[in-house]
Length: 197
Picture 1 (tube, rainbow, N blue to C red):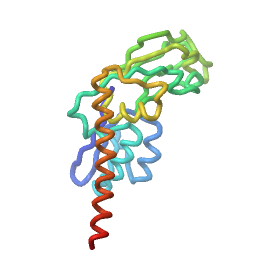
Picture 2: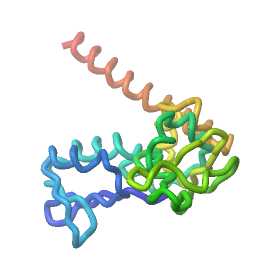
Picture 3: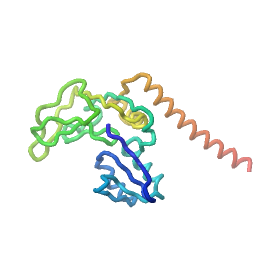
Picture 4: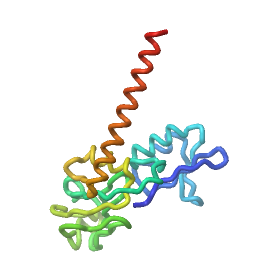
């Protein structure tokens, strides 16, 4: 899948990410401006934490884990989005993983997404409103998904998304548990410091 990157250039934060229709409205509320020349969103660098949180909420990762190898997940499309058959696209971790652009056009899968089981209908929807149609039994693998995005996708859609690599399951679970414990430890330290003062 396409990666998300955040870089700082001359007091501006530059966010490069695949298209996600839910991102622009919220990016604008943080003062983000689309740069057609750079094909990226540009923000004031002083808003870095807010921008990173927005990017993580929409894409499952802010790109800071790009050094880690991605994982492969298996996705049961009709379980991921029960209304997807009436839509043109299905998305995971803020990225489109299946799309039909016109009624009689074959369903498109982006780079890193592979059909594993089932098949897509040859056409779907109407001329004005193309749709994926009949996704029962259609399973895809999404490859090179950032670990944080995979963990969020599994937590959000446990019936639809599973990790393919058993070793990766342990790593994702362990990282999530470590983050929870670290947050709790910080809370306890603050409480102890307040009590001892």
